[in-house]
Length: 464
Image 1: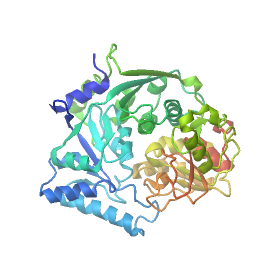
Image 2: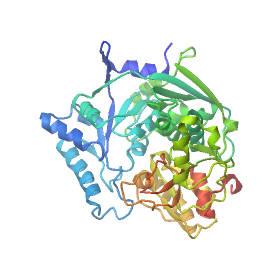
Image 3: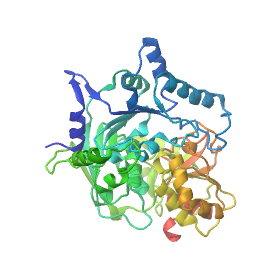
Image 4: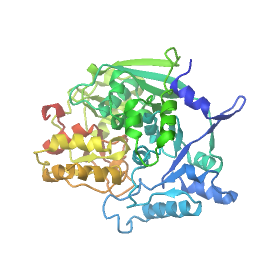
């Protein structure tokens, strides 16, 4: 019997190439400014237009400044990329949500919140964190620029079918433990290559009990353990989240869609290529100590000893700790940090700001901390203000910035200086990811908030 992944994949097969890849139909292509220019250039060189332009949605996010968006972008490279996307979208007749457009934001935040991402879809974007959209019960994955051109031209893509893996998390997450902690725990156990070649379905009580925002966070990080993508079967949580959103079906079409969506689940006797089980009670708030997302630990634990690492990886392990300025065996609790970043396609949604506000309410930002609080979209910005969260964080000494990818990656103004420590709710802690020489510690919004008000790495459960 079929897995959820098999059902969606098989329903989108156009042609099976003997001893080759599958020609797969794509329901939705998302385009941002970084990975699309060469694709559009290729289309122009061929003298062709987009096959189904109504299926393509474009918006800038990586290079978008998170301040003064009503003024020209200062960095010439960023300005060129953003302007080029606008021109390409206009020339090819594509949907485009530019800077300051009410529908603008990080593309992986906007898709679900607008109802553009729906269960049963195949979704691609020239961005690895396209896996986010799998939280809605879709097959979503990142592609390269030449593949972006392929989808523009044909609304299809050539892909080899991945293997399937189910990760089941039994039980319920404890106090102060979020979807981000669940994801970082799984990556730490799986390592950054543990799911390479697989499409992962997340299951179990801990997963089902997550909000849609939490599910989006979990699936967003699938790529960080090497997975092709991650997904969660749609259920009442999914349907309730989608209903009434701008691009969601309405009336009889809604009823028809939900009836179909309810069939999108793995059969009881479905066979996965690999099955893994974790237990929610084993998970505490997490923090990374190294230079990849797999180098994470519970916040009360100690950095693993060099001897605990496989011999082949000890040189790179030591190099990673040297870069971070840490030593094996030490605790991170009480370590001074310099920057705190709340945002990104991992943790830039309304629930993340609610969690952050729950910790900082009635407290004050540590004097030396530079904090960037960046909504994932203008919709999230509006929700923050409607719920009065802006007042809570402002009274605590924080300032809200404008939507964008911000300090997730050093492609805009929000860069962490060399040698500085940043507790970040984003998805990657590679060397220089947040700025040349920056030291990134990945964590949840609760851990970030605790660091922001204490100035040091703090277990958020002591403040809740």
